[in-house]
Image (cartoon, rainbow, N blue to C red; front, side, top):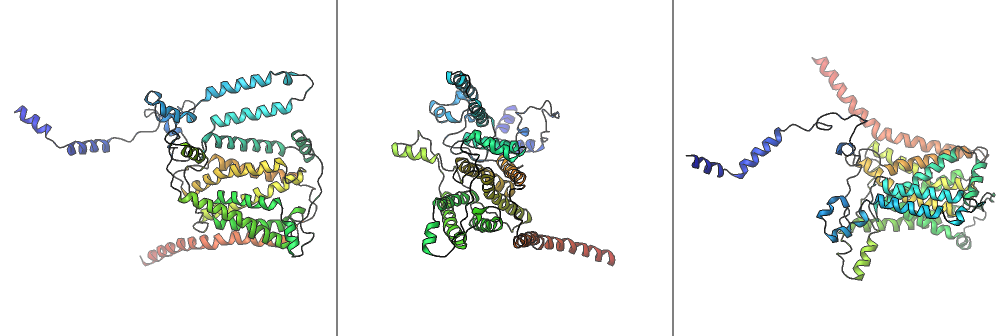
Length: 471
């Protein structure tokens, strides 16, 4: 009899066991937050617990060079360890190497020599130490190529620039000009104002004479903006808005005064359009590209290996931006804010170089433009994900937060230093133009979003009132 019971038990289907397990799992209580159900206080929280981590992005890992913590070293093969070498945390090794280099440089004879100015060397060493810390300890952003450490360094450079701006904010203009001479002794001299509207006759010779290296700079700049914004309409609106800003501010900056054909033909229709067109074509190429990555050791032949090395500097995947500024008030506000930030980022270097007496082609000006480009790439991506997919980004990313702080601090510095530097008042026509533009920016969301929302709110209220009256 017992044998029959055992046979009957053994003959029970596996589906019944799975159903029983499912019922048990369904009836299991949800885990309580904290450590074993005990609430965690702020001063004794275990920061390794998953609920304390902040993961604003759910990005795909690099499948060709996977992270080191995926497997333990005992489970790794030699080939896997070699492929993941550059993604292993080597904080202690980096610290030892940095201290060795610092000790060697600080104790060499030329540094120890008395009477020499060592402030510049000390500043460079401090900057290098900070960037090393940022490369190792800062959080990862949305990008993984060519390496997450590269984008951590970009964030560190942005933070250094922001700290420098905060320091300059508390200095007067003469002191700031004197400080710039410590970085470059050739600075500190006033520069003549240059205007591009002296001979505006529309002739082929004048147009040809207006073509210079800055036309190439315009095209490259808009190529970069297209890679950042990834939207044709946004690029066109920003391009026209910048030319209108030049018209509005040419009473303060002489180099904003240009001929009409320089504004709309050379700048907008040729240089800006060409750069934006090539940039958007590049975006379209990355959008349709099939992203299947192989490791370097999996690629056979010199040509395949070279192609794999070069592909490390291309995106791991691509996200197409659809800003949809008229979809909702939140999208509209984001687009207007991004447009304003981009305009400020474009106008700020013109004021800074004028106030600090720097030529347009000075390395500091070029470095600032290049730095803003690299900082804006992850910042705009973080802003897009934050607005369009709140499940991935529970808070604003670190790149976009710091970028907004940097542009805002630049505006404060320019506002403070501009007192008495631009005595000409704002023309009346410019005041009316900006007033009308601001009214339209405020009136559009009221008509598009405010009035329909008010109607949807009023109609149910009227229905409730009628029903109460009937009852």
